Image (cartoon, rainbow, N blue to C red; front, top):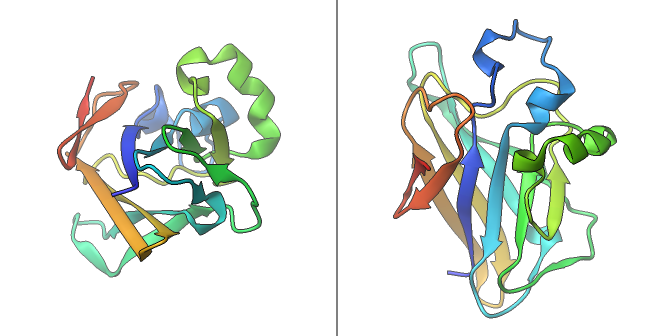
Length: 166
């Protein structure tokens, strides 16, 4: 495997208390996923895609079970071995806000933005996050999931195929 989901923060502080459609930019930047190149060869960032599971109101997986919520198809950059890209749900135009948010800014090589005005990762039902990419062997995929109701504000770390509170 070349790329894996290494950390995630699906439940930033205040997310569950935000009325639908009124999320603050800081909160949207507080929801993120880290993708790390653990292989020996560089991966074109333009081949990466981040997806998550879609649920209905009863936490049943929807027929269109996954949704891509981030890609950077026009990038010519390479995610080198050992580097991480942090994918934020929020908007690139709010990048300046990360300076005051050290836990969300992180020491990562790249920052990607889904440019959403609403949260993506599911708290009530839990979620499974997928990353897809192309390398010398063709199309690849990794996934990691977390349980319902992850602790507010906590970073989840990958352990096996699960994302668990640090």
